[in-house]
Image (cartoon, rainbow, N blue to C red; front, side):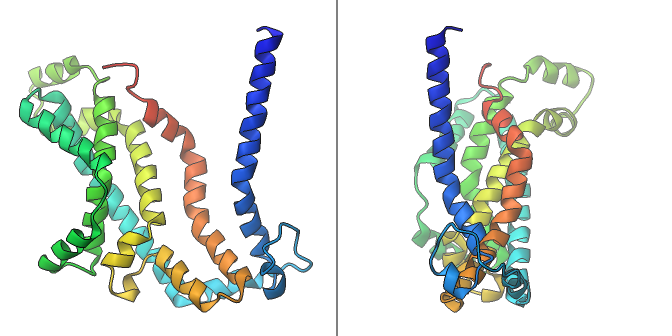
Length: 274
């Protein structure tokens, strides 16, 4: 490699590091200020606290509605992940394996779902007509519908890299379509399904508007809505608020850091074939 190319790569790496540091500054500020008292945390500084206040985290877990918010978020996220993975994988299998104008039209409808924004007012009216507004089911259906297009798009792209000869050989041996899908296709989709799982979980966990408009019962609020309520209660004590934010961010951030390689593999899977 020439000296000029090495210099360009070094400059690009320095730019990338600087951009990463700029993005990390707010997280560092939140983490440091979560250990400060009322006076110091109100300054929003990056300096270390004069006295470490671990009691901020103790105050959080001493409130029952916080734990309930975590339970609601885990429940809704888990159900949405199951629904999206199941329905998206089945839809991708049928769309990619059957070459018909009807299914191509269905696929284009899914693609339109990536472009068309969600209209919350008709959604609220529909939930009211179905008498499910304010229930867990309403949120699960809402998130499943919103996140299905991206998942189907990702899975159809990967399905193109799985040879059809595999299906034909299995069917010739007497394998049913259901058994083919469950025992042969699903294991091959695991890399992409892990990617879908992470993207869906992060999207559901961090969303505010869905539960804000569709969930009328405060006992079923997700953790993000609990943050909103928590800030209004403790707006003068930013140390406790920042500690709450760290606790909320930590599970998703940990999952993302542990499984980030699967996200890259899943997003690029099938991009070189089909």
